[in-house]
Image 1 (tube, rainbow, N blue to C red):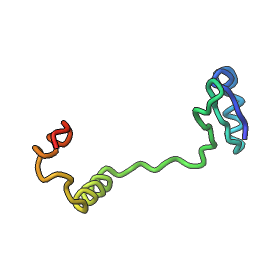
Image 2: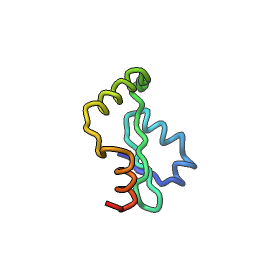
Image 3: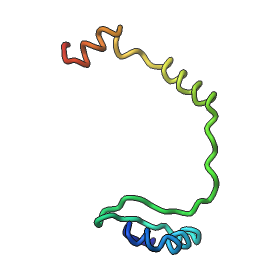
Image 4: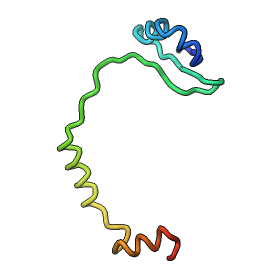
Length: 82
């Protein structure tokens, strides 16, 4: 594992990309705290099919009971009137 500050990444991007291409993980820090990882891209992420995603959302919603019996009870709850 390699470690670089954000400033070093700005000034030495090529070196960081070379390390990542060779399989090294590069931890990027800002003011001593980790903020990001730079890793090797092994494959292109697959695009999500919108139709399949929507069907999954609908199935999840259908399988759950409503948290409130109507919109008024939801509003009362959110405003602390319960």
